Length: 191
Image (tube, rainbow, N blue to C red; front, side):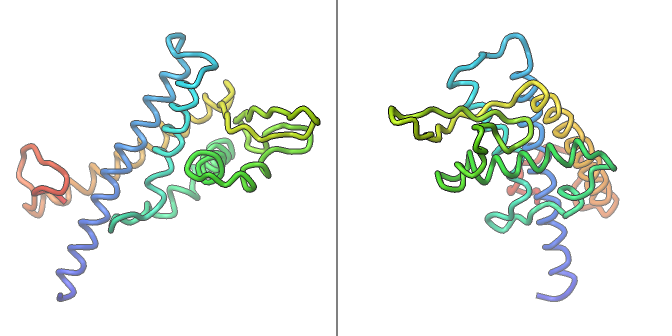
């Protein structure tokens, strides 16, 4: 494979990653907005399942998978100077790795402090106790209202900037004649 072909393949993978990230951020944003709405279920297992989906969807673009690269570091390190957005992103990362995507009770239990409060900002973790009073970690997490609102802001921020980058990359492709106007299916005629 010559340098030009390698460069083109790399650009295609990056564009595909950006398009998939846009879809993941939109999923997280729309689901979180629904959870914040009066119509959403309150305090039940459906709500917890939705929260798990939100966290996993949001974090998916930050991990390389099946030949699709992760997003550039700017998406996990540069939040336009907003400490709140950086903290919301970190809370999503910790929640994904320790509560929702893995079943490691030891790691998960570390997230609950001695006073049985969540160590993840914006996320409340339900804990029960056995008859002998020993705390039992119960994997029931909930975004509190502040955490939910901050997450919605984070998802909207990420969605906006990834959409701008996708638009720019597609316009570049159009200028090069790579993709004439039309409908494409990702992976079938489109990167």
